[in-house]
Image (cartoon, rainbow, N blue to C red; front, side, top):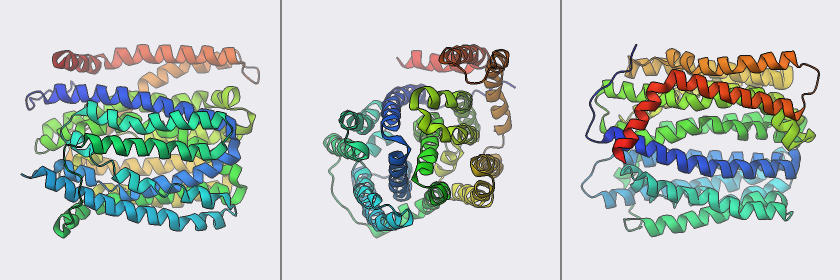
Amino acid sequence: MAPRRVPDPPGLRARTARGGVVNAAFLSGAELLVLAQGLLATALLGPDAIGLYGIVTTTAMTIVALRRVGIDEAFVQTAVDDEEAEFQRAMTVELALGVIGAVAVAALAPVLAAAYDDSRLLGLTLAVTYLPVAFALQAPQWVFFKRMEYVRLRVLQAIVPLGTVAVAVPLLLAGVGVWSLVIGPFVGNLAAIVAAWRASPYALKLRPDRAAARRYLRFSWPVFVTSLVALLVAQGQLAVFGLRDGIVAVGFISLAATLTRYADRADQILATTIYPAIVRVRDRVDVLEELFEKANRLTLMWAFPFGAGLALFGADLIVFVLGDDWRGAIVLLGGLAVAVALQQVGYSWFAFYRARGESWPQAVESLAFGAAFAALAIPGTLLWDEWGFVIGRVACTLCVLAVRAVYVRRLLPGARMAWMAVRAAVPVALATLPVVALRLALWGGERPLWQALLELALWLGALAAVTRRLEGDLLGELRGYLRRSA
């Protein structure tokens, strides 16, 4: 079945495609720097320090997510005559939530220190209490998001990772230890706040408005539920390993979670790119179905190979780069990579509901995920250690996909999630076959570095060739939009 082509508002396709490329260029560059810093920190600090940092950052960032409840998206879809006043109302709500989030992080600091019986967690956690407020103070970025001015938006957003790496890496090399990973982000966020305020087209002032607050929070409560479930799952997987096996085990699951989170980066790029476009065409189901299908095909071109790549070569990354201290993370890294990659099938669906002012379906999916995690992943871990966790986590993902499929069919009856998943799996499967054959042919215990590199080159070459053959029409269409917008 050929992809549907439908007319669109003048220039919207080209503008969205150009925005996707800009977003990809900026975010991938920034993420590569952060990944390099993370690998350096992992190799230098070891599982114990990374376990501490994993507990602290998981707590802080999930509380940041709790207060980032879609105020920016609600602002993007709001059409008013006085946009400056509306921005000030939205920023006021966001800042109030940020203050509440900072207090929550501070309150959890002694709880974490007591739960893990490690006093170091108290100071580290208190040191990141600023994060919820820091993100709120970068609210001027929303204006450029709404206007689809992606270059200005991504330049501002790139300041945090660039500043973080510029400060954290020298501190790591100087032997400052885990505090390097706290000081670096503080400097990066401070620089980003200053830049956002200088770039803001609107005056930055508080404008409390109860009616506006109710309107934004009514849109945002389901997003809060989603973030709360994410917090419970993230803390649950740390606790189930840490309370039983200690901080080193937390380091293993933290490493796996940190590396596998890059599987959703294509989704983040595309979801933030197409959301303003979805808002503009939210009443045209045919256009929405096309957007959903093409965005997800592009997403899975990254997510499936990334997950399969970590499953195939994650052990090599640990053995040849990070060192023997990290061997305990091999099973967790490979299994979590598969689970997270599968979870990207149809992942951007919630943006289509939010554009219509319906944010509650995502909360339903999140509750299903939380329930499945409690029923499958935690008991699996207690019974069969890391293999039980991996199997339970993959089963959780299948439960999530079942719920997601129901809501996708309801809003976008022509969307084909299963077809997209199978299509994306074909290049990965065909690229993996020769690698498996080579491993079997050269089987002899521990693989040398040259064999791992040969397998990786073979896998990447086959993957690129098959993907180009299968998805050439979509990639060609994208190039055409970019040429017309140049």
